[in-house]
Length: 207
Figure 1: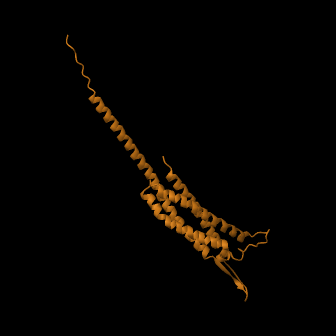
Figure 2: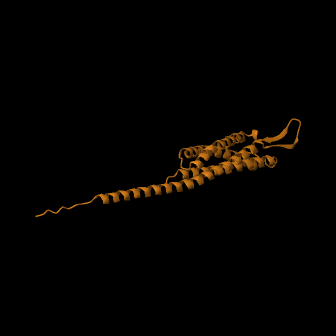
Figure 3: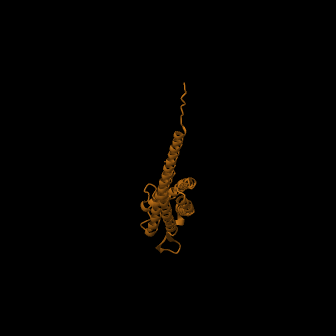
């Protein structure tokens, strides 16, 4: 009785399986590259917006510090021993404002290279994290300077009847207008810093 031999060929299915697995890996890599490109695209857009905001904030903070620094007015009437004059250096709070906002403007200039790096490398985490932390610290300084100066400007406009502090803006109108303009500009820079922090937080978010 002749024996029948049975041959099982398993080579081809194995090859097909390997090919299918390679195709799946390639598809995953392609999807990863597409996702990375999409993420880098919107993060680059955020980085460009960040850079433009910093340029605008530089102009505003330099303007605020300069306007406050040059705020001075002398009344036309004076005597031999008495002259009525008001200047920013007569108020320690305004001096603090000028120094603080000048520091803020200097920081913004120094932060521009980091902002440019985030445009060139939108997926880089380190420069964005540095900007986030630094912006938060500078936001605190800007808010303190603007808030303190705003309190003095309010007293200059309205006085305080409880302490018999009389308003001086009726006499020193130009001085009060200059200080008020500086405080408004500093307040706008506070809003800009809030936007910068939000942009950094969004850019650091991983999808």
